[in-house]
Length: 274
Image 1 (cartoon, rainbow, N blue to C red):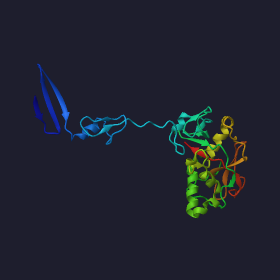
Image 2 (image 1 turned 90 degrees about the vertical axis):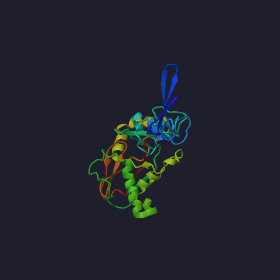
Image 3 (image 1 turned 180 degrees about the vertical axis):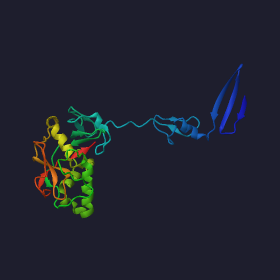
Image 4 (image 1 turned 120 degrees about the horizontal axis):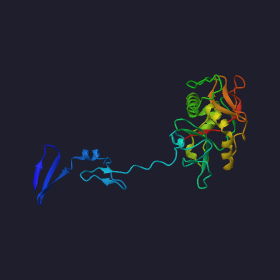
């Protein structure tokens, strides 16, 4: 056997066997960075992992990706769904009723980015958009029907943050429709509280365009259809300091009726991002 010591951290052994020479390259214990290069990048052991043969690092299998969406977040999973699918509490969606799963909403909008919105399976009642006439800072004003506004949760968060900054724990009294949506959580998914939003005009328009299919899905799971509540729904889309846009469920049209309409009671049925 010949031992050759290199100038680096590698030790080379050459073994003689019969008339052939087999070079075998081994790495000293301190050469842990080479383990990283080879893909052994975990510093702790793991189930079904493989330990680096010349270091303390491990190669661990990648964690399984979740089967469904993360409710309350735009993860891109909605690209696997279609409008009128039933969204279940495990984040999956299906056109069919799945007996061992819990419905949490019906898909009413899917964006080009693969992010979706699901309509709550129940309405929350009628409330004012606000009880004061203020042009909310950072909330875009729509002078015509807000069919291009898909910012449900951005709008909701803007109003929630503004009202809480102004009024603290009394904010609900000033912006009831938004706080009702924000505080909603179905009894089967209490962890979604704070993730529901007042729908923007574009999502309400999508509901109307797909109302027949959406109603069919709601009927299959014995939930109230789109027109079962009050005819006029609040959107989160603002007009100006005096009015916000309401949506008429039976015709799909938008209206602000008259200036200073924010104080009238209209229907609140929130949506959930996924």
